[in-house]
Image (cartoon, rainbow, N blue to C red; front, side):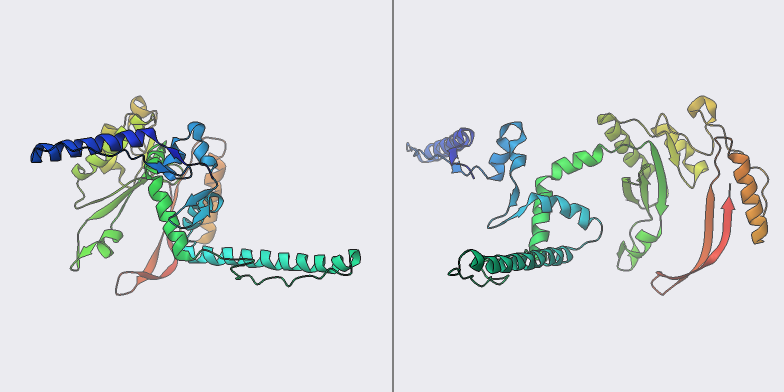
Length: 341
């Protein structure tokens, strides 16, 4: 790909390290030792040298190399999109194999057409049989295995881990959706049959991206403060604004917590116009409807009433479920309760 060259920085560092070792050995033995000149050289396609090229020219290199092979960066950039959508490496290998064999068939047909055309121009010309797909000396249609694709993907992730961590931290959160799950630690995080944690807290932004996730051993807010403080400091370190709204299913209990951590946060349970520009939510009269006609009538009336305004209403549904001995949901019943507010 490029000529071999000498990295003077690496050579100087190696020379200084060798001199320190010789001095230490000489001081211990009382002898005077001398080293030999040795320049460290490496190829231009080495991953270390690619990052040193000016103007990000290393990104133009078309492949990600392993010890004895390599993979196209076009396929490498496609792997995270597929793996994040539950496409396994073995399935990707089968897809590549199908695409390559299809291309082999097309090349075979094209070659046969060329053979048919050659006698028209010269009757003495004879065609050669097209090689098999797996012929190592001719066509050489080798396809990487699922294990190889997985190893390359893991190696690539390790090489860009620092950049990925910074990119994740750069994701903002105009709104924060706060929720606590008690099933995950109860059924998965166990030691000798006993749960280690009490709950798993998860906070997502307006795009559904997870911005905060951690376990707690109790429901106390004292275990949440450190995580929220770290999230707040990360937002401000990367120039992001504090969340303007926080959605939680325990407004009364979480109100003081979020108000103290974020300056612009708003909660549906209160705050006042002076603090966040939102009016206090008022729980008024409510009706219980059971007939389908009554439900449709009231929903239509609410829609017509709220359509010319900027007000909204929320919906929630509940239904019975059946679980097995391990606590996994095996069946779900019909919707039993629909709540509109």
